[in-house]
Length: 190
Image (cartoon, rainbow, N blue to C red; front, side, top):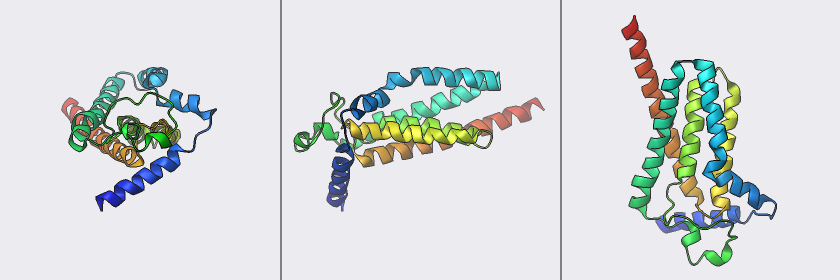
């Protein structure tokens, strides 16, 4: 069963990774680079501060804790436990791949990029999705960032799926704790 799943994942990876064109290479590199998104994160913090005032501190802390938890779950727990090589480190796959970036770390399960972007998207959706329905576009952003990891050869599709699952779980737990603590603080002030 595990071998069949691994083979299906590899086949799907080769298909998705093979959807490359020269004009898309720099776009995917831009999407996959973490520093690309720093202006977005700064704007997000500024918007939260402008929109929510003093409450923004708790919201930003919730986002930071959720992202840190999802990132650590992937890098400190799942990658060392599974020891699944990234596709770009698999000698049998290298001749079939289109290298866009240097390979990076040895292990890839689960994708921290997917975990972190889906954590942020899900946190913001759970916190403000009813009030700001446009936030649903953050899931498209998380999906494109995640796909960029397959495009550059850093992750298999199941690495991405697991990372998205970790991120969704981290966001759900963090937002639940935020609401519990915010409710407790409100009750305490009463």
